Amino acid sequence: MLPSVVSVETRRGSGSGFVIDGSGHVLTNAHVVGRGSTATVVLNDGRRLGATVVGEDEDEDLAVLRVGDASGLTPARLGRSSELAVGDQVLAIGPPLGLSGTVTAGIVSALDREVGLGGSSRRTAVQTDASINPGNSGGPLVNARGEVVGVNTAIATSRGGGNIGIGFAIPIDRAAPIAESIIRN
Image (cartoon, rainbow, N blue to C red; front, side, top):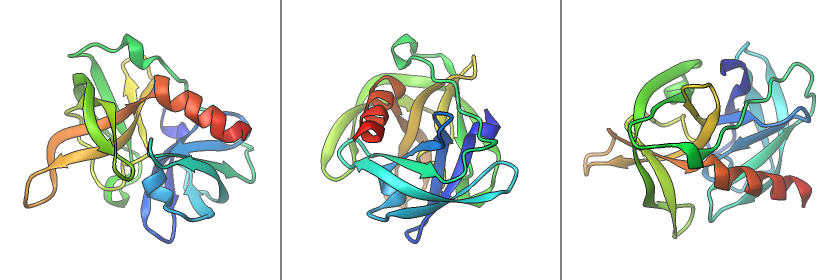
């Protein structure tokens, strides 16, 4: 899975993403790209590639980027979030705090957990105890078969801030059709 995961750098900050097809499209969070039109995608091997923002869905907190040179990119295998069950093992992959190639393990803690995404919208998400930290946003939540089942997007924090072991991912069954729609339109 690591060759499919990228770091996304924008003027606003950084996050994660993952390659979703052979045409150079990368799925990430809308809050990672902000309202920007360009980004830099850093591959697992350290290559830095320019990317444009194809579009975003702020309510769902999803955005699609397109890398100019798609040669050598490895698309991630997408699974089905509808097949998840509480207790299933999952991995969160991305560069939290700029630490590339980081993988954390946990389980699915809850399904269809209502959380705030994007602006003021509330949507259901997969809840996990796999560590999701700043920089993991937009990266994949992966099942034991190495398939993407969610897009890491948010964490619960205590009043003092910081990760308290509760993370949320947008189910891939909802994210993939939105990404397809962004690419088509």
